Length: 89
Image 1 (cartoon, helix red, strand yellow):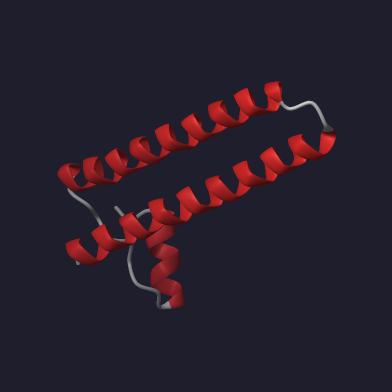
Image 2 (tube, one colour):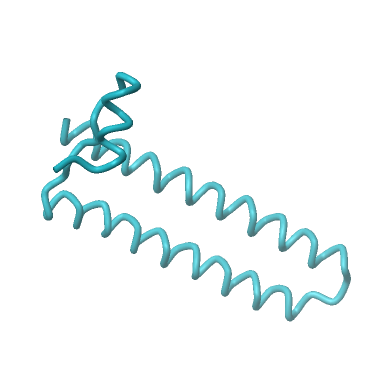
């Protein structure tokens, strides 16, 4: 039995979703765990720095740096996952 997603992809002529093995899914999950930990660490460090900062301008700089760090980590996470997808293809 096909899922609604698979039926919609057939109607619109798209590629069916790739099915991954449990081992492959675990590799994706490991990447997620690694980068979730890095993001949590960055947030904790920023929180510590915010508590030490006194001025509004310093807090804004810390928040901006955190936002940039999270975006960078998310991009790296997606790049690693994309490399795995190419490897599995």
